[in-house]
Amino acid sequence: MDDADADLLVADLVHHAVGGDVDAEQARAAEGAVGTGIVGEVVDDWVEARKRSYTGVGDAMSAGDRDALSPGAAEVRDRFAADFQHALHDRPDVRKRWALRYRNKESVAQIAGELAWSVAAGLDQIVPTEHLERTVRAAVLHDFAETVEMFADSEGDDKDAESSPESWHLNLTPSVGKMLDWYIRCFPGEAYATIGEIQRQAHTTWKMPAADTLSALRSALSLDGELTEQQREMYFALLEPHKDTD
Image (tube, rainbow, N blue to C red):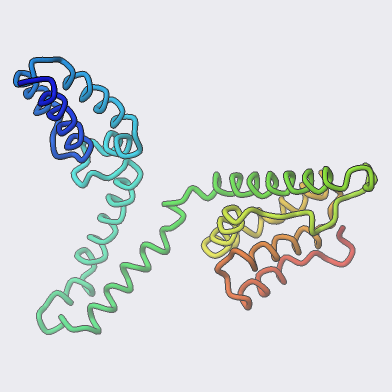
């Protein structure tokens, strides 16, 4: 085999290896035909790069799971598998629906609804709300700090250094706005407490009145959130501070 043929074989093997059609052992076995260690070196480099890639890390973390799920996803699967078994088999009133005469659309829809309820009711066992609260609060305050600083820099000497920023200086990036909106939709009670803490810290840091902080959050969610206007207005009405609150 001449050099040109060897180069073509190396290129072909690397192409198929990247596509997942040829594994490392197959590529190394072809070295005998090429008479060089180039293929092995190239494939070794590729294998190492793949291990460190997005796909490779996911594969490594799911290794050993029967469904190739990540550890967290496997925990969720196992938890709801147990819940579903209890709902479908351990309850006599549900188990009798497996009889042929109960196998109709209405009965199946009712069972599906009960299973869906068990997932929705267990959402707080999937999402670590205690830690999520701190993360959302930190993200909101970080976005606020960045935009306050940005407006302060743009206004320069025209702005009194001791004066408080305006409410429209408080902005959220779309990602943080969507995360806060999701938090409110899924955990309204926890989000209520989180927003109260955001108001407190905004007042401590920038002397921002609580009502102005609330207005800024409401505006951000109106742009990037999925709450309906009615839901948003009702929720934020419950957060409105008393008249004597800064």
